[in-house]
Image (cartoon, rainbow, N blue to C red; front, side, top):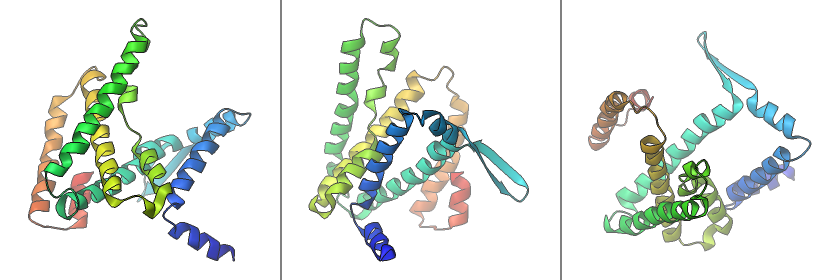
Length: 214
């Protein structure tokens, strides 16, 4: 009975949204209660992954932020690519509206923040914080609607959130980095260009693509 209920839950379109909201609420309660120290200790606990005698030991929070989130954005990127190649974003004009919405979604929250914090030189440095859209929560909330939400709305929100996050990353690189290493950025363009070329040539070798991605 329990297994059947669990199977039905995992197959439900709303399950991911419900899990995300429940996890966020649980985390906020834990961080602001008597369990706060335990919560911080768990996130700060070191997790070690060892392969062939070589190990990598990092705090759990880093594995989540830099590891699992990278996989999440990879899956989101695949979804967006599918829409660009054969879906509702195949026509370049269809990208224009979410692109404009993404610019507005970065610009206006930042302007509101600046307006209310103009007199505080320390607080004003955080103007880029409201410029980013939390794509995970945006899609999670949309998932709660399930099949009742039109596909076009999901694609629009997906594109908007990705473009918004890309803009936020660009803002961090340009305005919050004291020493931008242009040389390393140029080095990164080499494997990126190779991956683009392999994609254009329809070369689908997983090992090679993973190597270039790393």
